[in-house]
Length: 79
Image (cartoon, rainbow, N blue to C red; front, top):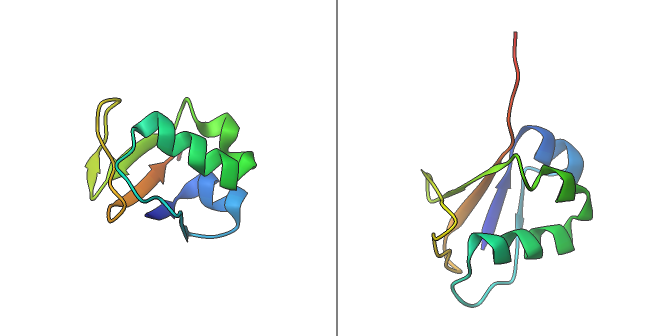
């Protein structure tokens, strides 16, 4: 599963994307568990970061498959 990191998530991980070895459909909560296991620094962003799956925002009931492209989209402020 390809995970794209934006804004704070990219700064925390030091990369703009990563691959997770996921071999089955998982929930958004399971995705977060896997992402935080790989990148513990992302833990504080869990509550405020949106998940997108293949260009569409995911909900708590969205199932994410191994071939999906996932984006972690933290809140962004500007001025």
